[in-house]
Image 1 (cartoon, rainbow, N blue to C red):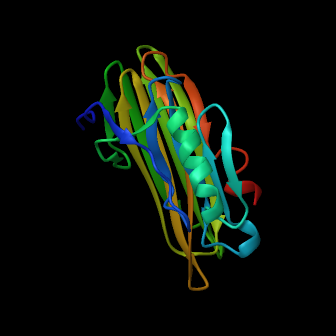
Image 2 (image 1 turned 30 degrees about the vertical axis):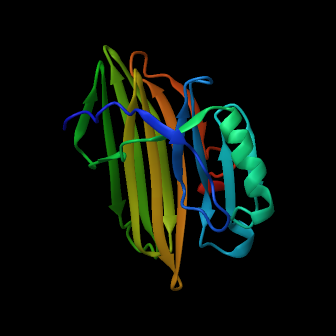
Image 3 (image 1 turned 135 degrees about the vertical axis):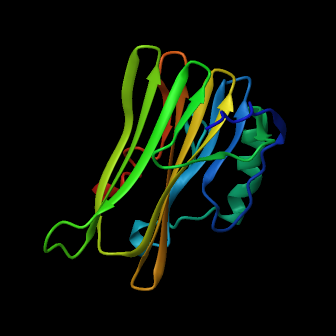
Length: 208
């Protein structure tokens, strides 16, 4: 699988009021960091969450999973001050079981569903393994049991210089309601070290 084209930022990032679409919004050459909006939506009301994270600090946290109109101007002013610019290229989807080579690094994403004997809920195991030279690291692993229908796990990447931004999303349907959760990580392709993660801990579905 070919490596994605290196991403070049274009215009200032702007957020809008309402229920957001999760994802990574842009890059700051000043901070050398990514701005991502992570969280959970479509779950029971008490489980919804939206977190706007600069890679250095949380700019915004809302427990109802939305951005309030009265906060938009303040957020956009702060985002502008920090120098966040939008990406010009869409992320490149990762295909489960197919390796992606980016410079010296190779990334392998797998997402598998199993049905243990006599189990009501299927078990979904999602992993992300990176290899840089002779170093191989499992940088992500999630194993969940869901009483759900039509669950989908997905991953996509953006290349930013010698960094690789990996975005992880899960969708499922529970009792007719669609649930979405989003996480991301920034990987140094020369060392395979994570430089930051979004949606870990505060949005770990295994703890909800």
